Image (cartoon, rainbow, N blue to C red; front, side, top):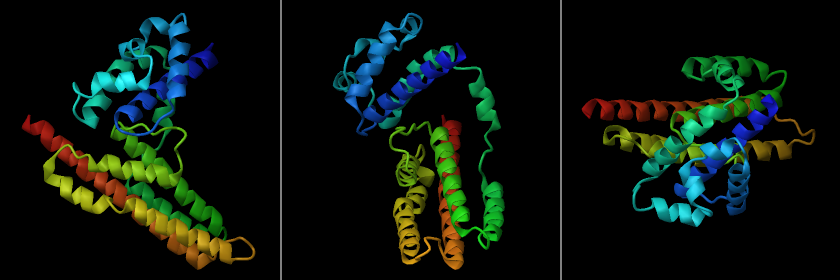
Length: 250
C-alpha cells in the first residue's frame, strides 16, 4: 500500500511541477498532462481531492488562458498552483517524506568549504572522483535553492547545466528592488561560467590518453566549482534579505 501511495504522490508532484513550468513560460509535454489528468480523474480516492485547475481544464492551453489575465506574474501563477496542490499533496504524502527531508544536510558556506578542503586532499589520489563529487554538491545546492525559491525543475531536464541555468533565472526574480541589481550582476553569468568549467573538463579529459584528468587541472576544477557554488549561495542570501525586507515593509 505504501508503494502505491508513494507512486501516487510522485505523480501528483510531477503534475504540479509540470503546470508550474507551463504557466511560468517553460516548454512541457502536453501528452504527460493529459495522461496524468486522466489517471487522477479516474482514481477512486485521489479524484475527489484533485485541484480544480486540473478538473476544469483538459489541456494546457486552457490552463494558460484561465490564468494569464488574473495572475499577472510568474510568481503569482506559481503560487496559485502551489496553493491548489498543497492540500492534495498533503493528503497523499507518504509518511517517509518528512523523514527524508529532515535527513538531507543543508548546504551552507561552512559545509561547502569543508567539502572543498576534503576534496582538494582527495584530488591527489582520485582526481576524477573529486571533481565528480563537487559536481554532485552543486547539483544538490541547486535543488536546495530552487526548493527555497518555490521553483520546481522538470524531472526530464535535470542536467547540471539546466539546473544552474534555472537557479540563475529564479534568483533574478527578486522580491525587493534593494538587492535586485546586485543579485542580477552576481548571478547572471553563472550558467556561462559553468559552460566554461565544463569545457575545460571535457578538453582535458579528451587530451589525456588514459581518460583520467590531470591532478592540477582537477584542483582548478574543484576550486572553480566551489566558487560557482558560493556565488549561487550568496545570491540566494541577498534574495532572501530582499524578501525579508519586503515583508517588514508590508
